[in-house]
Length: 183
Image (cartoon, rainbow, N blue to C red):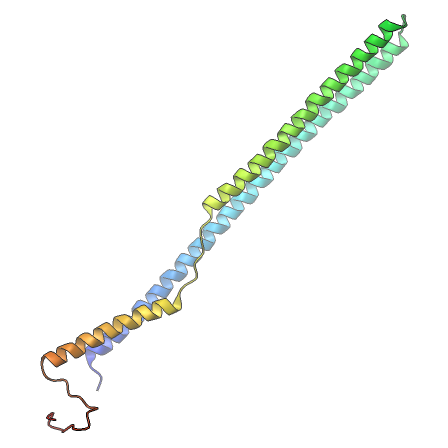
């Protein structure tokens, strides 16, 4: 016949196992959700950073195109209204080309700096994602089952020890067993 103490202990160990597994599953789901949020945040920030770089580059290229049109118009006007020749003409023309080149270099330098900053931002975003994400640990069924089994075994051996202490533990597997409890 089953002892009620052992039955309660077995049920308690089973419930502890189930509760532990459920808690581990919730922790896994929470870690996965945290990672989803961190990934969505990373994607949003990367898109915003890419958009900012693209808009800045388009703006700088538009400025450069407008400046080139203006310089071409001024150069054409200068060549058409030429009233002098020789060294002065070449010096003024070289000045136009130098101004155009300097402006182009400044604009292209700004684009290059923006690209460098974009790359640094992407690295920082990846680091931020790593800091926001968590490790996902799947429930450990074997460890939890082992812990529950050890808990039940502890209760069982406590029960047996109490029976031995009260001299009511009959050894049913002894070959010299008598029904009155004597050996």
